[in-house]
Image 1 (cartoon, rainbow, N blue to C red):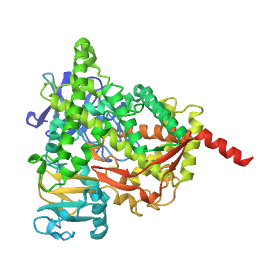
Image 2: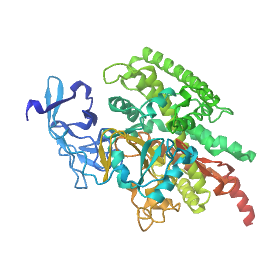
Image 3: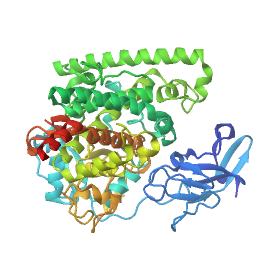
Image 4: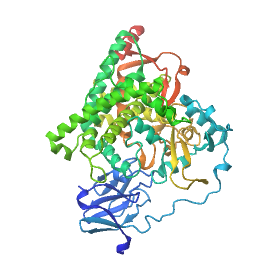
Length: 588
């Protein structure tokens, strides 16, 4: 080992506890753990699906990946129960810093030879200047892209104006792209400025070291180790929603279930991540949802616009959005001011923040400076938007699917009755973890109805995807649903069959193709909390209510506005005790 090959990794005083510590060297991820023999450094990505191992946990002498539970010995990097082994980098401690011997780390080959270029790809014929823009209706954009994939194959190209967009649907190629973030692929270049205009520029759109710093705070706030402390708050919000639905059931009123679910998810998000109980579930009118509802549709329109007209002419819809953003910002400002005052009065709280808001206000960036108000507000907006729509829409789709699957409802109900007894909500986190059928319903819903049906990215450097050469700056759309509806990956792929996730179906079941939360280093940090919310909500709903969809299944459509929601889904609820009593009368 030579001094020239040593690269400084971190100050020793930054490494509190045994780890795992997520660090990086010139954009390459490294995980550091403290062992009885001293610090050890390994490659920072899990060899399974590229998750950041620094977001995992230590269990005895094992480093456990947070995504799928792969376990690695911290002395050797060997995987427990498999042939994989983490690459190890020797560590040197010197002058209060730690260095790694990283020869080979920065010179690894990044791509293989290509046999095709964009000029060789099929795709729909476009018009001069417009490209294929005239064929794209934004609310059904995902269906158009999936339809073209069925016609032109797993890789094709279309054009927005003069800009080519490569579309991928082959799961292997999609996985390759997602695992190559953030070094080779980033989010679409126009996303960050559009989000900045909306006051929502945070960890979702950040890149480089800014992303790494902000993601650490988000991952820490949403870690499963916090779920036990969070659990009573989840129970409180779910119990309120049950009471709201009981009132609707007693009145026989139609229920806009997606809107109610958005109240639920916003209340959970603000209570858990901000430490504030806004309780929109029990309000006749809401303060937040109507304003948030304007953001994603406008973001979607601006993202796919050929020309940024809103920067020159403010139409009524732009002014409505401006007013909504200003009111949201004023509300969030009050929360930040109150939090700063509380931290000033109790400075020790900054040492162990109890929620994401506390962490953002007390944290420092990579240069040791407090985060700016813009970054704090952007991340709070990101948490609100991500926490509201994605989970609420998935639950809405689950209700829609279950309306046509009575046997799945029976299984869900039997599980909730058996585990929860007389309780409306699972009594503790251990019971919640046993709601496997509810989890299977959530996974099957996300397989058939992914609320993020595609991702839009840009290539940072010249690279190769499969056998396709892609130049820097090329836009790439990654379709997540075609692979999960392919019979080569899932038996009876168009059927709603939750039991497939419990090993109860013969035939194909390639779970690696199912990536509703993304993959690689930028996988959604809130995925496990979202799954917990879904399981608890589904168990509560079907334990306590009969659910009837109003209208036909085909009347409920898919609507894309950055996320995919169920359009025109309304239900009628009946208390399950009343339904059981009526059935009993009929049997007499």
